[in-house]
Length: 377
Ligand code: ZN
Ligand code: ZN
Image 1: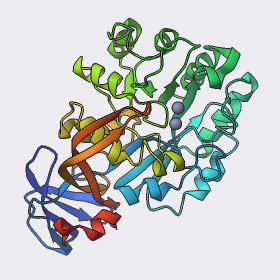
Image 2 (image 1 turned 135 degrees about the vertical axis):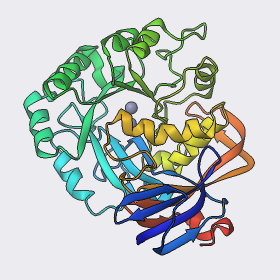
Image 3 (image 1 turned 90 degrees about the vertical axis):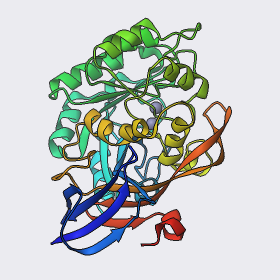
């Protein structure tokens, strides 16, 4: 006896599958025989994937600059796991942890190497804020919650410190078991060549398609040699769209050259959710559907690849034994206007519309899911 069987769900490759859930785990996938307390037949009309994981968000409610509520950017938009990227450092991470225990969305954190987190925009302008003992103690207190480190390495954040905060971040990473390190890039200094040169296997460059002069492409539109070498070493690219860090021109040129993101993330917070250009993870994913990526590629970027990048055990794949985290969505063919972080627009024709999130077997409908005719369950 299962708790839930979802029948004839359409997977990202177009095939149909049943998914059975027992307690908080996926119990069977494929053609499922047996009964369940609750059964839905989607008749191939609704798409389903492993639960969407947004690798870069901001949802510490007390952050003075980038704040939001986890469930608004999570289950309300089909996202089952969000990873806050450095809103908090060692000084606030316990408070952040406590504040998000009641959320329906799974909330995890990348710890800012500055103990102050993003309390001000220039958290790495003062090297004394990088406190190795405080980082280590926070990791020891919250080993399940903190999945890695975050360092924002652009001129307005590091000011005159240049590359030094990143050198410290790499040391902290090594001192703490080689956990994932996400590095925000933006305006120089430091130059991206210098940043890329320090990164190794598993490190994550976020804001990878930003349109600033210090971007991954040369003025001639080629991939910088330093980034190419970093990718060859196993460095990962994360989108981190945000308010100022995603350019259609850069993303299109990169994708045309086969430089796909490993993970698609939103860098969402209250302001860019309400006023754009981010809106939701689904909206950011839709942009990639309209600039040359396939649906399976886009879905992998928020499921299996996201789980791999942040080493989330038991998530990101539709397999028995995994957490019963699922996203149900619609793929609509309709004209849609998209805007990047530089104010450029793109006319698209395909749009992902999240209908429901399942977290550990518990179902949360989105607003569109509640009102969708395709989704009469
Ligand atoms: Zn950033
Ligand atoms: Zn961010």
